[in-house]
Image (cartoon, rainbow, N blue to C red; front, side, top):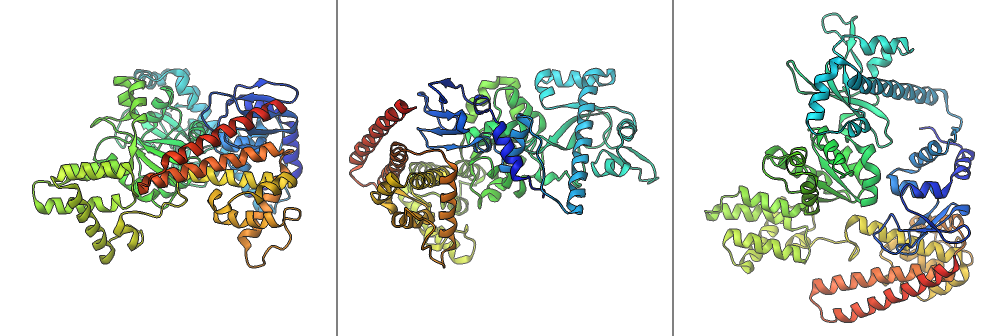
Length: 607
């Protein structure tokens, strides 16, 4: 993979207009010299605490402690990695990126990919223009507009139409300088089975849905037949750029809204995605009626922490949800299910009941375990003792992932009522079922101790799921980097904290203890047998060097936010254990919130 020169990165950063970049997501108001405020795009708030310093190309939120440079902002809001963010900002501000020296083979491969991308973009543009300008495409236009789609949203998704001719793309692309081999590699033409020397267009007389990657580069197409025999939908064959297992339709349009919301909605088809987008629900992608894959899970994990399954309410849709749960079980995705009426898909529901009806259903999404329990109970024979035993055996693995919680109590109540059992008896049977599964090798992957109790290892207490845990670690890392950036107040702060109580990440705990003893020279005396610690400290030193000037109030604000998270964890544990004293913790929490407000007031006076 090609690398961009350090000079390119510096030139992009110098060219950024920070106010213009951030204003695409945040309504900024000027408050003094080199100082703008707005409501933070990374958390809900009414009072603006998101601060931008244009001259320093830096942002910082006094409410959630998110901070960074232009590339950090784009990675967060657009759901891109650093390379993608660099390319995004370069395009936005007209900077040409220079690559480091490549070996001839790598340069040739990169140039070939660029030509294939260019060829596919050219084809998508041609198909889109043909849909709106050609008389032959009139039935396709009538069909799409009759489904309730506006011309605006169809153009946004570059929906098009492939003419019925045998060689329109073939001839036009040859004239533009593309070879037959490139057309075959892009999946735009194919060979005749009877006469391999004869070539013709792969898509003909079909509505065309371009499928793009997260950066919006067209990789292939899905074509819908308007008439004739054969399957209704035909996809580009797998090749150099297009891999069906990796494709999520609409990912380019959905990425920014999904990254901001921290969640993505998964639907089945092209038209479902477009319908949701037109209805104002922009964080939706489609699997195009195919099976959900591990590659798609990996793509989603990079963007969001929560995946809401909004698949058709039929047998195939339910099976797809169960498969999605299996694939996501070892990822950081939290799965939820959007309840749909029997026989309905999202597009039909919008057409019949309106966008608000679907929006309300999305807002009422339930954890996957709730869907799974209901599905098992609906399919079980609850009239016989054997049927009830089978139902208990089926729901036991689903409940094994739940620790003590109101949700688990409600599910126990629901299952007991359906099976006509006392809740205490059901709990005993579930425990025995889980123990039996552990002994016969049919367990769910938890330890035997966890299966016996029905309580999994929750990770850091009070993390609020994978996304919450990630944000918590980012806040801890930001605090330590601030302490390094201002060694005086930073050393005082590090000396005054309870590391084990305040920090949840084990490596950062070790880093904090090391920094407390080596604030003046953090890279000195690192143990030779702890590579994780060495990497963590080096990363913190680099972050401290990249940041802007840090004050004692900023460090205190960051520490107080960690205190708030600590108290949230304490309250959650106390509720789970049904311990007294929650009101005392709540009062302490309110005291921390009051302290945060006082620090924020001081910070606002200094900008």
